Every structure is written in C-alpha cells, then in structure tokens.
Length: 259
Length: 376
Ligand SMILES: Nc1ncnc2c1ncn2[C@@H]1O[C@H](COP(=O)(O)OP(=O)(O)OP(=O)(O)O)[C@@H](O)[C@H]1O
Ligand SMILES: [Mg+2]
Image 1 (tube, rainbow over the protein chains, first blue to last red):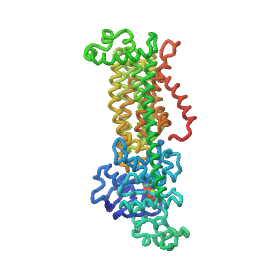
Image 2: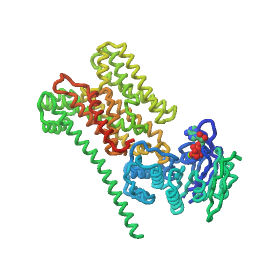
Image 3: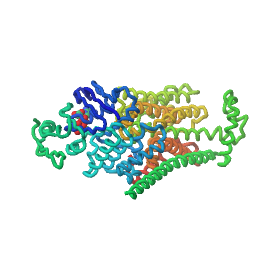
Image 4: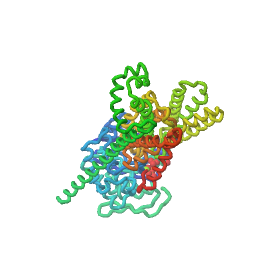
C-alpha cells in the first residue's frame, strides 16, 4: 500500500499554464474520480503523476519519496497509466500485449509466473476468447479492455486510468468499473480515474475532484461535488441532480452560459 | 458453480498451450531460416567454372575451419593467400579463397540490413522506415562518391578509402539526426523528417560530384551505388563481423523496450522504459550496423525495408523473435539474389543490389496481395 501526495503542482507545455497549483492526497484503497470539461487538464495531471511529464513547480510524493528521484522501473512497479487513446503500430497478439504489462517485473525472458498472471487477468476481464487474436483486428472497446488488462497485469499499487470506459458499451462500462473497484477493495490498491460520465463517477468513486481551467474547482465525496451549481459553473450546463435508490444521477437539461 | 470453475481453468490451460505453440512456431521459423541460409549458401558455393559438388563444399568448409585455426599465426604473419597456396588443395583454395567471401558477405550483409531495418522501424514506430529512408544509405553513397571522384588518382588502396569514407558519412548523417532530435525532442516525427531531409541533401551532393566528375569515376560511383558483393575479402568480412557481433546482441537486449514502444511513448514510459534513451541507443546501433555493412557492399536498400515486413507477416511483431528472424530472412534474400546475379550466359555479374529489388519486389507484392489482415 502506498500513499500518494501531489503538492502544489504547476505545469505548462508552452507558455500557457495548464495545471495551476494542484494539490491532491490519495488515501490507501481509494478510488478517486477526476472530472472536468475538455481541456481542463485531467490527462495532463495523470501524465504528471506518472512522470511522463515533469511539472515545472511542485512535487509528487510516493510514500514520502519524490518520484523524480525514483528509478523508472521502480515507479512502473508502483503505478500503471493507461492513456486516453492508445494506438498499436505493429501487430501483436492480445496475450503478448497483456504480457507487456509484466515488463517492470521481468528481465529478458518471461517466467511461468508471468504467464499465469496474464491468464488470470484475461479470465478476470473475460478476454479469454480473444487471447490469440491480433489486437489491431479488434474493436475499439475490445482494445480498451485489453489495455486495462495490461494495467492490471502490471500489478501496480496505483492505477491511473484516463477515460477507461470511453468506448465501452453500457454493460462493459459497469463490468470494467466493477473489476477495478474490486481490485481496489481486495488488493488494497488505489485508482485515479479521469472520467466524463458523471453518473459513473458518482456511482464508483469514493471521492471526486472537479477540474476547471487547470484548477481543482471542487473536491470531496460525489454528493458534495456533483451539485447543480458546480456543474453549471464548470461545464456551463444546467442539470438536475436526483437521488434514485440511494444513487446519485445527473440529468442534463440544457447548455447555458457559464456562471 | 464448481463446474464453471473447472471450465475456467481448462480454458486457461488451452490458451497457455496455444501460446506455447505460437512461440514454438516462431522458434521453428528462425530454425528453418537458419537451415535455409546454410543450404542456399552451399548451393551458391557450387556455382562457378570449376565443378565442386555440394557435399564437397560442406566438407571443405567443415575441415577447413580447424586447418585455419591451427595455422592462425601463419595467416597473420603472411597472408590468407599464401596460406591457401601452401596448405590448401586446389578445390579448398577455390572455395575458401574465391567463393566463400562473397557468400559470407551476402549472409552478414543480409543479417545486418534486415536487423537494422527492423530496429529502425521499431524506433520510429513507422513501418516505412529503413536505413534508406532515414538518409543513412545516401550519406554512405556520398562518402563513397567523394572518395571515388576526388581520389581518382589514388589508385591502389583506394578501395579501403572508399569504405572508410562511406562509413564515416553514414555515421555523420545519423549523428546529425541524433543532434537534431536532441535539440527538438526525440520524437519519431523529428527523426523521420530529419532523415528524409538528409537523404535529399546527400543525394543532391552526390549529384553535384557526379556532374563535375570524370566519366570513368562517375561510372564507378554508379556501380558502387548499385551494391555488390564482388569486392568481398576476408579482412573486410572480419571488420563487418566485428561490427555485427557487437551491435546485434545489444539491439536484441532492447527488444522488450522496442515492443513497449509499439504501444506508444506514454504507455512505454509507464512500463518503466526510458523512451528517449531506448530510441537513441537503438537508432545509433542500427546506424552502426548499416554503416558497417554498406560501406563494403554499396547501397543495398531494399532488404532493410522488406525483410522486417515479410517476417512480421509470418511471425508477428514481437521483436524478440522478429529481430533474429528478419536478419536471417535478409540473408536468404541476399544470398538468393547473389545466385541469380550470375546468369550463365552473361559475361559478368549483375550488381546484386539490382537483383535484390527484382527478386524482392514480386515476393513483397505477392505477400501484400495475399494478406488477410492488416499488418501495421
Ligand atoms: N502536448 C501538448 N502540447 C501543448 N498543449 C497541450 C498538449 N496536450 C494538451 N495540451 C493542452 O493542455 C490543456 C489540457 O489538456 P488535457 O489533455 O490535460 O485536457 P483533458 O482535461 O484531459 O481534456 P479531455 O477531456 O478532452 O481529455 C488543453 O488546453 C490542451 O490544449
Ligand atoms: Mg484527457
């Protein structure tokens, strides 16, 4: 189990600041949702956390250690990041793609144990029938599931998923998020999930941060963040938030000028 | 419920068996291509005015090796020629002294170019990359042209100057690409664009040299650019071998990292791969291999592009197997081309670089037309 702290992170690609003073603390065994309009910096934040980008200011601590000082392979053992969209250039079987997730744990040869891990993950995500197919011959949603499998096979302490359900059908959305939630609960790992579907965010996450223009605009439990006022402010959409069977639902009404 | 579980484990066992078979097929392919290289090399060694059967060829090679190893100091103090005159029979001398050098050169060059091509395609994540498209071949061509045209009076020993110059310029172009990408960020786009720009620059400079050069020298430049195995000799092969034996294992050590790159830079970084360093190291190693090969053979462009593709269609994209396979496949293509390059009627060799294209293009088109699925 690890503890992640994002401290006063500021990041810019060019001269325009994209993340302005972002602070997050991730508890153990927590599922944290990141919501916010397009271009608000969600993906950038995840990239900074996994050291794909290096913030100009601030730091990211993993169990109190600055990730900048960690060895790349050690970091890869602790965190797995799945980008918003992944394109495979060359042909690769589904099995090999998931086996790739074991990369931080293995040398030049993959061991029997790694193969077992892959089989386990394929089974968990119901991908067994696709195991030997070429990943490029699969549908967008199937590919997305495979990359999630890859991240799970990596056995990280923290999962960083950027829109993991964006191309999944309604059933697979629930299935995949259930699996992630279960891993979080059972293995005591944590997850940070950037997600556009506010209803799924409300349903699955323990805590939500709402980003807007590179700031954290609101943070807290879903019911405190997903309020009509906040959503109106961040997205410029008038919504109704209703409670149905103890679950929170956001019903969009119409776009309006941002408050 | 228990039933379901049994089904589940059965399924896993099934997949595992299938995966093992899949790996087995790849290893079989590598094994088969190795055998094929040995057979084609044997056939190539039987060709020539003096009749030597294929079994004789193999036994001459087999018994020749210990003979050479025992008399290594004689060879080093005298020369290989003296050695074969004193210790070898006529047949042995023909095989070892005349026929084997171009054959071994075809094998080494094929391996080198095939592997360099696979590596570069992986490094820039682009299946159209090759030593040729990244400007390295035309830089080597310029280096050779410079030596041939400006050094036309040098006559003896010129051969070596051509090779050294070609090698030097080939590496120069990859250092320029490296420099540009260090400055601009090591992205595939930068490398490809810089490579293409350099290719045009060096071609233009070669053109200028040819425009002002003497007719005889220009003809020699053109001949050099076609690529040929006729200049093979054991000392050149030794140098080539050293370059390959150092670089290829280093490239192969990086095959996991190259696999990871295929899923994108961000994913690769998240898997703990140092993307920039992998890119630079593999690119420089592949350049070194290319330079070490084409400085002796001239530009044989096609193999670096095609061998990786053909192997990818057959055994998939896993670089751990693809790298050795495409090297061996390159050797097969080049060996076959060298056999076809000596038609019985014509008085002399056709440059092997030309035959490679004539042989490779139909094979390549056939595989493209026949393919059932997307392969990149
Ligand atoms: N590579 C880049 N270079 C320059 N600017 C970038 C780059 N990537 C993103 N940006 C800018 O950073 C801002 C935040 O982008 P980011 O991808 O983090 O948004 P996001 O919240 O993930 O959006 P989305 O919901 O559309 O995925 C955007 O304004 C974008 O224009
Ligand atoms: Mg995004």
